[in-house]
Amino acid sequence: MSEQEVTTPEAGAAAEPVPEGVLRLEVKYGTASFSAEGGGHLVLRAFAAFREQVAPDSTIDRTPGEEVASAPRPAAPGAEEPSASSSKAPLPLPVFLKAHPVRTNPQAVVAMAVWARRYRGAEQFDANSLLAVWRDSGRKLPGNLGRDIGAAAKEGWLERLERGNYSVTSYGERFVDETLFTAE
Image (cartoon, rainbow, N blue to C red; front, top):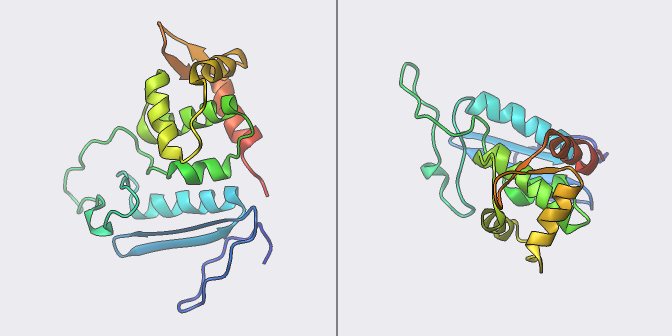
């Protein structure tokens, strides 16, 4: 199988090990399920299309291990939708980082800030809120997060706002999407 194919395993097929650099994603949402393996950008693009079909106006936000039954369901036709802070269903941070591999802590800072903006609606952040996101990533905590945030700001990926707050610049978004995104 080519690394750029997105495949859906046949029912009853045995799970095979995933080759290095390939993203495998399996999701169940209510009675719908999604399964894909291949290049990160293709898997994420296919997942986005699935998400739009299954729950176009709701957020799929649950923690690992939480039962699927407690995940938000799309509203019945004619029913009012609860308001959501973001129209995008959250992609787990570790999956996002696998598709956007970083080599340095300042790159990790901007990648996590972009993820928090897209999937948590965080338009601005400070070191403490970024540290909370960092803990969710499973990555080793940085020794000097303030320095790493400052380095990301010096690169132009972040904008310094009022005292201690930052936001992601459009240049930072493009850096994450175009430079860090793995196009296998």
